Image 1 (tube, rainbow, N blue to C red):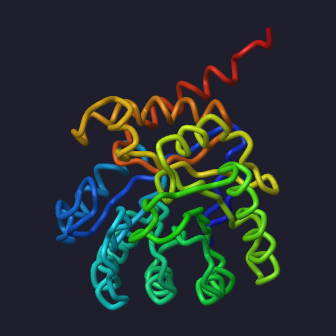
Image 2: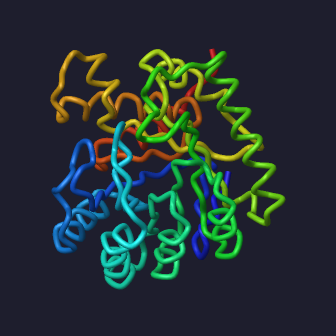
Length: 282
């Protein structure tokens, strides 16, 4: 259960980690426009690091349902100054770039990012080439459709089976292309081409998503399915349900959690791990 991210290796044998989210976008679903300036984004990243985030995931293009595309040049313009400053001033934190574009990924890696988080699942051969050549850690996410179309009546014969099949297919292709198995983490893509029922089925079966012993990353923070379940449209009301999911998912073996609120989720992670270490089989 090790994850090799270029010059840093995470060991998830008995300890998970939190990936903190910083979106430098004007239109992300929960924090669009808040961190457009480098100063505001850097301050937010610093807050998340102080709360215990081991990884900062930087996104320059919204992936909310129906989101418009951003061209490569603009996405690089948004993320690169933050990557460069964090690498310079916070050298101990691992940086991740949330992108589907090979040019953006390569620019971010050259500036110091150690992880490529690709919601399109590394289907682009050029993105695979960047991963293989640079030796960074990668997050391979499952998504049905694209951000523009993914919530238009998503359907599966068996959502768990199809996600596992996708992971297995990508795994073999990535290995053949020269990506190290220890560099790969998988994300089932909660909310990406899934209904409320699909999301709940995934959460109930997280322990079935294992492919070749590779870790799972879960990203549920502030997502709309939580609002539907608790009967609230307020983004802030989704924070504590996210903490509950973090604890449940850790009990099911998920070591990596991508969230907006770091402190509460990290505390839930550590509390759950302590109970798991000291549990006695009945």
